[in-house]
Image (cartoon, rainbow over all chains, first blue to last red; front, top):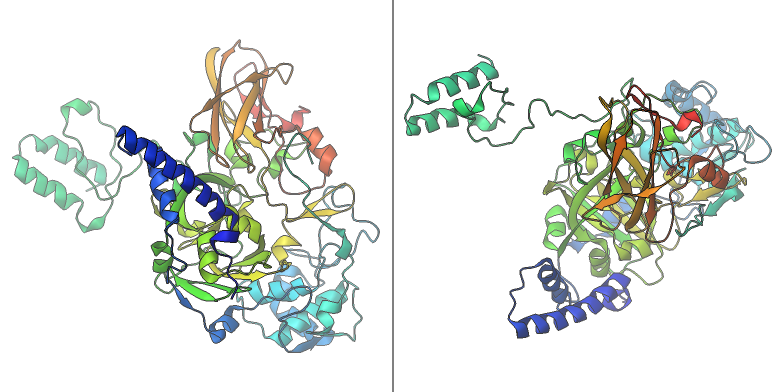
Length: 216
Length: 417
């Protein structure tokens, strides 16, 4: 059982330093007989209290594995935690045409909500240098697993959380097929979906803004 | 009987009624927990008995600011009317809204926050649990990273008020428990670097948050401006990440999962990423860079006469304190330091003001904010050169306002300013 605890938490380390200064302030004020009713006095009270924090407040309760399993629906690009199930492009077409088409259009391009399909421009990634290019699953999304994660969370908008894992794998397969990323006979499941390499996979970079005089 | 005439009758008869009876009558008027209706202005308030006490205060009848809804009214965002506010605090009912699947109605008695993943002890906290932990409060802004998109445009529309452009920005006093306190309680593992934060709305809105921020100044907030957080702002509890883009500050938070990698949710890949001119897209661009806007005088206000006016506005930075705001009235030929209005708080709205003697001619007003890192709010062309004209989010370029000789004022980004 390795706990982060006071020792490793930067904030608490800071608090501990402040608490030390606070104690000095208390000593000073007490020796001068000042009433600690200033904003400084208020901070001092709070900060000096943290030195007496217990290892645990014993507030809250342990979460059971069953409880966690109900809520732990996410899965990332590595596929860890992807649920069982599978769906084909053909099955996905059926799901899409019933559950998705009214918001995303017959080919996934018409809207009225987000355009899902489209690979233009085929070359490059000119979203920064050109205004108005629609960002689609095919030309912008870096990970196929995000399709499953997002659909499971939020789609269809009027009945979120209503699709089965099979249906979500299927509709993900269909959208990827429409974007010409997987072939028509492909089947998506916990192994194949994370293995899909998206066209924009390598376009994403960490934030390099750090403040200071340079505008980035 | 209308509210106004009922009030008028109370006022007219009050002088004839004994104090005790009057009190009874006055109490009866507000019985049932209803808020007192706004009182109409009296011809001579010194000659009529005033309104009695009420359970819930109301704004003055002529002071009825509203959030900007756009036309046609959108369903997923509304804007704070910046030009109608005083000071740094946004009244809670005017705090901007942005939600991805509507505002959920969460039963606070059934609310729970689960923290699990790379922790020693997965735990669940009720709302009462959260409130029982050592509490803290801070005043800070929340800004949608898409705020001000209308200003990132060489052909921006002129008839736009400050709130219509930058109203996805609000400031509150937030109260809650430090997230570091909760992570200490569950024993977050030292190799955990990310937290998946998930909301309990119909989108299960989720973002990956660096543990470093969580341990720095993040909060699970349940209070806003002296009362419970409003439903639109995350009732009963939300993640607060001072200085960071609003989307990452997941509202209605129900789950935090510690991990050693980001989850790559839709809101950190497909959305809330900033494509750059070099063919990449900036990801996890959390921090709000320094920014300011003049809120007065600005469209739709019309200066009625020349003479002394005070230019007022608001500045903020997600990287710390605003150290300086400069104002120009001549389109940038000369800049003068504005007065910063106390309090000047880190990662918080900061008011500035600058007196100006308008000579009745054309003028071009601008402000630029400088924060404690030395960052200077850039103009549009500088920002476009750094990121590209097609980028999205974090539009913190200088906002120009053109004063016409007839006193009308327009948003002038599209004027080639």
